[in-house]
Image (cartoon, rainbow, N blue to C red; front, side, top):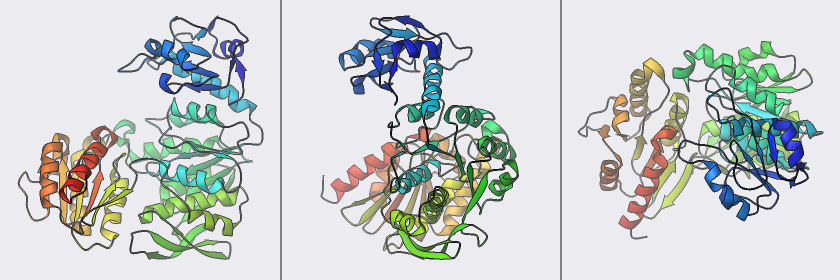
Length: 467
């Protein structure tokens, strides 16, 4: 982050200054526990805690000043009230990030949105571009009104490539994020049914995602998934240079000759304008090949050589938690923790990945509810349950009251069962799992399925003799 004085911050946010205006700020933190010297601690009032209660701790840990919505002890800028439900300190952080973005010179900001795969694609783009120059792509899903400004503010001063994930809960949200980040490259991964309950239709989702495309200037670059017709339709909304990626023979950057390895990952030929380089990704799932192609397209867009991109893909690592995380445990049991979030498209990709992996034993899909699917929620859950069986999943285990939407029986049949809670799921799965089996855990974020996956892993390790 560029250094700012407390006086400058006061002017930027239109606040009230208490303390020395010459105090220098070199970072912004929202966690009092991790504040460092030079940080501005932003005291956000959340659902469970009020950041103002931790202002003293932040100063004790090194914070130089505070950003508040009500006066506390210490040097601070008190921000004006907001006109809606969003905390005014969050709006103030956004204003500071906009100022910092205006100070950046020669920086490519890559904005990424889509119904699924945003975070994994962001992580891959960041790793590929890091082979070319200083790159900033924070782990996790920092994709909302708070996360994106923090991404901008946490970038090092010498950053060349800044990768910013953009989520949405309705029309206009991505436009707002683009006003903050000023992306020069826009990537659209796909248009699916995530958040359809809030937007109302798949067409509405496509319209919301297209806001990123419309925000890219003619001098910029738009990267589109050639395998998604709704994404490709966005081409008409831009005068920027367009790169397409995918498995389609019409894609500019594509994968050919996919080969599934014994570990569930893939080798493939990376193809671009007559160049063909064999490469691989050390990650599960064909959908991750598609994400890697998006990263390759961005690499090409900024001028990287195809050979360097292909080499970078072979070294990719999982950077964000609970996304196709593979845990091998004693007894030759494999746990795939894909519990961060779920929608119909990502659930389909996860089930296809599970069933594609070579395995000596059974394949269990431990599933929770997918949220924000609107009036068609029960029908969509039932479709996913049927798809799992059709693909060859040995046993579908739906967990939780909300997971009754899958329409599974409360007593085990040959292929499926519903259980009411984590205790029942743990008891059932530990009893049923044997050597050589694979367990997939997936549900929407609110279901906290990573807790269930971790709990079952602990019990299975004990069962197979390793604490």
